[in-house]
Length: 618
Image 1 (cartoon, rainbow, N blue to C red):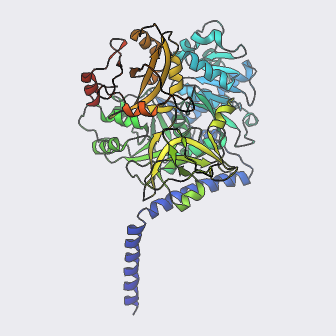
Image 2 (cartoon, one colour; image 1 turned 180 degrees about the horizontal axis):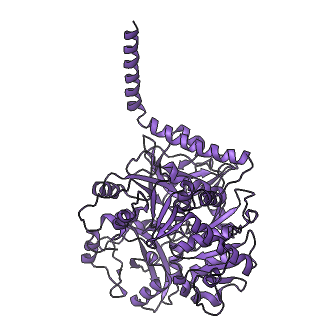
Image 3 (cartoon, one colour; image 1 turned 30 degrees about the vertical axis):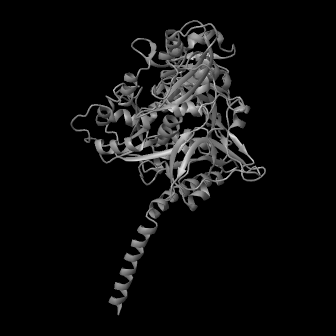
């Protein structure tokens, strides 16, 4: 009797397991992921109830005390332990305590390349309770000045290799900003931080200087191009930093992992997810000054890397490298990042081995994120009714030609069906706040959609179009508005248009992204000329390479007789984007950026074919 009962129980369990895999194949993946989310939320709530507001800096100091000799940063072969970074950052804090008037809550701008001193200065200023504004090390002139002015810093710290960039704009900087350089010999008007560090104390900075009284207080400003115009300083609060630092842990990283970061630290991916993630784990970070496809796998083998961060372009660059023996001979088990295309994903796994790709989605200033915890190729994440309890979002219908959400006769927005692209929006409330941009109320308000489904509701507009399939996987579809992504960077088309439009022979400029097979969206500028002027292609080339980062320079030019506008007098991009850069479709003169000739040259059918076939690399 007992044997019969056990046999029946076993058969029932097998049947239930079979039905679960058939009807709910991702049940356990979803369950364990949500368990991690709940655990993270529970831990933060316990801190709050105990009156302990623990920050990323607090966690770093805990590790420095608990495991002082463990390597925290490995940079160009040199090892910096948790204790080393703690002491060096304390020196930075004492320099500013003794030689400046900086106080808790003041903003300090930081312009540095990837190097240990980026982290030393960041943490040193954090120990004083200062808000640190990360400046993009690629921008110059007008954009750089705009960024500095918008975050209203009391001081600016610059790395030795970027000092010339600051010297170019030094006369235009506000007079109340003190400029500090990580260099011993500096020009007049700039203070040598490196010199003062040599005699500074490395004693602990009193906790009272940086104790958190509110997790929603600003911690960092990270610049993002957003959807329009010049870069904007996204306000990153302590709470956002804490949430981001849990990303690597949520994907299964541990304190034993060695994490390779080649992404720029001025980006939220490198700083919040990367460095913050290492601190959450108590792990070791191998920091690279700049990504190198040819050195990537050698570094991974040399330092026994187990996890690396990526953007989609990074993986594509690795796949474009010449094949060589032993490409699967490494210890990498996880790759965490965003923006990898499905075809690159498949090629990457086939070529470099069984590496779990941990794709995620999130905007620097956004209040919604997704994590692909199942490894489904092409997906940025997954949702279900439980997920929506914690991460509420909607995909709404969008008019691509009018460049705005579709509203019905009553003025309300409506949801798209599964399988259709829709604009991703997320409710703004106490649980999911949106902190906006520093000193830019107008741009903050432009990121909000009001009265979406009912009077008075407010949603964060991500500016991204997403698709949800029948299995509830989410896929990135495209960006809307005046931004596109190229070489891992968000390109604000209005900023590029302003630079091109400074030339005296150009009347109007319309910048947009055009699809290039196997490469993403490249910049293209459609321009009209002023009457009685001629086009100087060398001057256009000189203008863009002088005033724009390399990734923001338009790869193509299109000369039009007249610029098309929408009914609200906005430049029409939809048809231009659709037509792309094909000389077979376009009768207007087309030009291609030739870096060897340092000019734009006519885009012939032969050049076009070579670009399409991948023989000309952009």
